[in-house]
Amino acid sequence: MQLTLTMGQKWKQLFYILLPILITQLALSAMTFFDTNMSGHFSPADLAGVAIGVSLWVPVQTGLNGILMAITPIVSQLVGAQRKDKVSYYVIQALWLSLALSIVVLIAGIILVKPILNGMNLELRVHNVALYYLCAMAFGVVPLFAYTVLRSFMDALGQTRFTMLITLMSLPINVLLNYLLIYGNWGFPRLGGVGSGVATATTYWIIMLVAGITAHRGKIFTEYRIFSKIYGIAASALKELIKIGVPIGFAIFFETAVFSAVTLFMSSYNTATIAAHQAAMNFASTLYMIPLSICMALTILVGFETGASRPRDAKTYSVMGISSAVGLSLITAIILLIWGEQVARLYSTDLQVIQLAQHFLIYAIFFQISDAVATPTQGALRGYKDVNPAFLLTFLSYWVIGLPVGYILARWTTWGPYGYWIGLITGLAVGAILLLWRLVRVQHRFAEQKQHAKAT
Image (cartoon, rainbow, N blue to C red):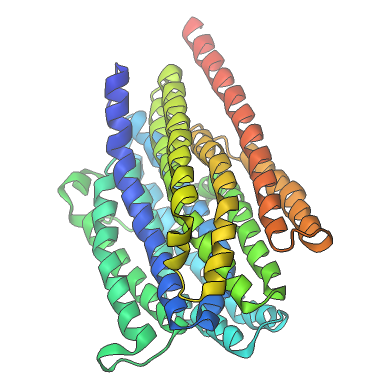
């Protein structure tokens, strides 16, 4: 990353960092897409089982990944402040933290997964697919969290092309393993939806190893000497990572968990409704990669500019990122309006599932527009290391407003399962307004602090 003086230079740097992140996020999302899609073509029950498994796993994965993403603003601000010698120390501490979180997740899974699934009203086949899918995914927890740290380190330096190439390399491997393990091709066992979990866990090991080698041997990264010294666990560094990361992780968790909660509530409906809901939600999650990628790019760029004490540049990048996300969301809305049926057919050949999924996709249009405001705004706030208010606002919007509204509409009106989606739209809209208000306040306060510092 470098100092930019004109708007043209800023747009160039934004897209230089953003495009590889977007491709990376789409590729990572594509793993879940192919898990869901290929399981759906095996059977509706396998699609529903993977849907339940994903709904339990994704909030945990994204929430804990969010904690580890604390390394991004820390490294970007260190680079902006010309304190590169501290980078290796913090990356190693983040890797220790990733290992600790992995152990916690595995222990919690052993204790909680079976009781949770047993408490749900699931068909036997759906129950078993969900259980063994999660058991398979457990083998990928350690490498996934370690990869999150290594990826965040490389991205924080503005070298987003490397994580893009690593993820693109892994995607065809994941699809091939799905092909072999879901359908039992080429002599491999025919595992159905469970095979997608085995395939994805294996892929996580591959991307972690490649990322580790790249961070250690890549010419651009050698000056940081990431693995030249394996530091012991340092309480002070872990405290800083946790102080920044936990609010980020909880904010992400509350956002993703509310979608998973809706999917779990959907278990009271028939298998076709669960499958259609998951198909629509999976495609909406793929579209969500656009604002999420802008969010991550803004964390890097805003963090770099705040570390270098340039409040005007930090604010400019925030405006550019949010406006870009809104514009792109309007384009994807048009795509869903025109080709909604074709999108639904990507997930199933069952006519009932296709019709239901097409209806769900209409509602997805509205909440992905709100996401276009809320998600990049959170990224900008993380660049300022302002994370606690965003966590609280996210909880309020999604869990105090969005989910209760959805539950009421689904249970006591004729909207049925669509009521949950209306609740999601309501919560996301409120969250977008509140987060944008917080960003304006933070930018104003930061600019005043820098002006005061210059005056004295």
